[in-house]
Amino acid sequence: MHRYILKRLLMLIPVIIGVSFLVFFIMALSPGNPARTILGESAPIEAVEALEEELGLNDPIIQRYANYMLDLVQGDMGESYKSGRPVFGEVMSRFPATMQLAAGGMIFAIMLSIPIGIISATKQYSVLDGASMIFALLGVAIPNFWLGLMLIIVFSLNLGWLPSGGMGGWQNFILPVITLGTGCMANITRTTRSSMLEVIRQDYIRTAKAKGVKQKIVIGKHALNNALIPVVTVIGLQFGALLGGAVLTETVFSWPGVGSFLINSIKAKDTPAVMGCVIIFSICFSIVNLLVDILYAYIDPRIKSQYS
Image 1: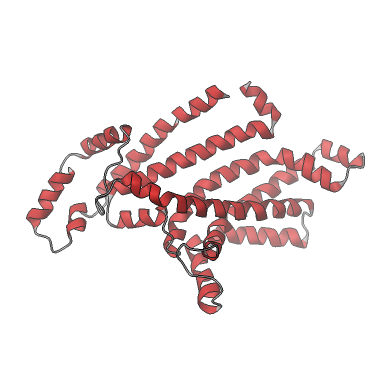
Image 2: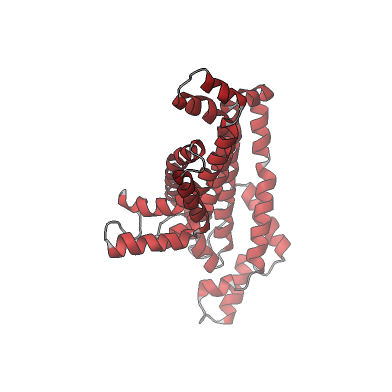
């Protein structure tokens, strides 16, 4: 197990290189001049050229990328073009807010999706099954930003029950968490239902029922345990989707997290800040997938025996 964990951690290196390479070249080739953005449209051309030389923007793209990666290896993500402060500090100061939002969305999704998926599978083709599947399809189809705007209009502007944005008390979490977790909940519900349907048709489930084991024990102990592997896989993948969805959700709700910082950095063509955000997201996503793989061993003893 330890060798497998070390191997997966080492695989972070090519992931970071690949992601950083793509993002750096996209930012470099996109229209706009960071020096002009920093100094303003009315700045003289001499000042813009001097700042370009200071920031190294006149160097070839490959050289700039190599210099950035050399600094990154030493733990330096550079300084933000916009604020002039270290990128790592800027990102980490906002990271807890993003993680709180992502964790809240995931908890909301898991608490609702797994019970709905189990009930939908055990009562296949019933009215409840049809309603849950319609809800799941709507959750997948509705964009996060549209759902967030609709929730703000209904619960903030019309009813006045909840704040429309910002980070404060627990009331501020409700609308962003629902917005972020709805799409994730829909995917987990569909996976739970399909996985449970496959398991409850197995011979050992019929044998347990024939022996008089209670329905709750058959479903909760025997069926659910064997249906969890696909569900846990989707949960791990959906965490990455939550981080990506947090970019739009934070913008809609004025949430002071990494997502809103990333959007503002893209608008300003602040390449070091964008690179820092994307790299942190990539590391988090890879670590979560590693934790999911480790969790497999505790869910299914057959997988644990392979590691041993």
